[in-house]
Amino acid sequence: MIGPLDRGIYLASRSPRRRELLAQIGVRYHLLLFRSRPDSPPDVDESVLANEQPDTYVERVARAKVQAGWRLLRLRNLPFAPVLAADTTVALDGQILGKPADRKEAAEMLAALSGRRHDVFTAVALMRDERIDSAVSRSEVQFKQLSPEEIAQYIATGECDDKAGAYAIQGRAARFIMELRGSYSGVMGLPLFETSQLLDKLRDRRNSY
Image 1: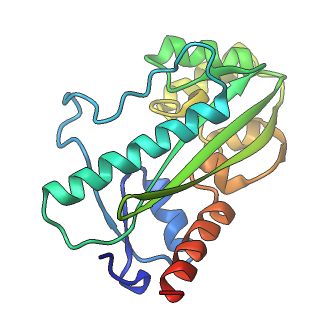
Image 2: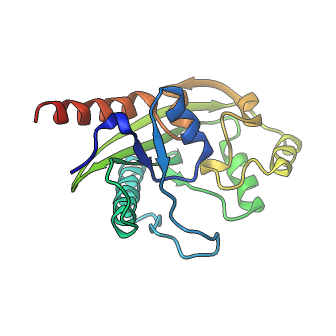
């Protein structure tokens, strides 16, 4: 059986942003990392399926990540506790913009987002025993018109690397954003409202036993 929530949860993510956000709402966590080396094969296939919608995609990947984390928990014989995972993607006109493969693709993504409104979807999944609960946050972000120089300067910082849509809202790209409707923490990578709801739901189930 799973230990009580006050002993903490496992966070199946390498993202420092997600760590900061969990700490912000006072959730105790232990890191549950997958690959030991960057060149190791991925634990979860994040390929987009044919005709897959952005919200369906992020929820599927987040649930796959939390299942991979649960398997790792059992494989390593770690003390049982709930496992949390999340996934974020950017969508422009319904087209998914994931993490850029290189700086060239990052520049192309930013040019496409320039002066446009796009969606950011983040799914969070929480697993206890063999049960998974998940939720999806959707936010709308309006970029200002970006000049080629602004894009080049931003790319040169390296902040675009490994970021969905090639930007980080909590970094230098904040000056590109004219308007945000939705969840700031969701755009960062972990929607705190939805995460809290899942944790509260799990706590309520435990208290009902």
